[in-house]
Amino acid sequence: MLTPTKHTKLKYSIIYISGIILKYIQNENTIKYDDLKELLVRNLGIEAKSQFNTSLTFLYSIGKIEYLNKLDAIALINK
Image 1 (cartoon, rainbow, N blue to C red):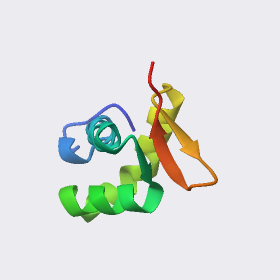
Image 2: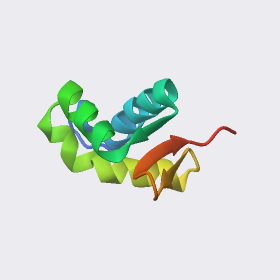
Image 3: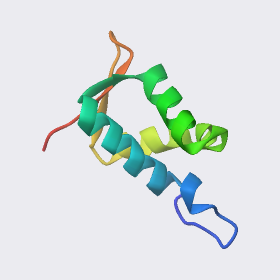
């Protein structure tokens, strides 16, 4: 869910995790799906794993990232 409630830990919100994912991808330009997931969990904790796919879907839907099927990687779309 994008709208936080009073019980939402902002560290695990979709918006926050999406921002962290964008930072990782900007540094690497292209990063493997599993490596990105592992990096996120290592830095934010296991709770971030449940919002990982939703955050990727959000970034894809607003045109910030693309999925490279042959490489199983995420790439930043430069606009």
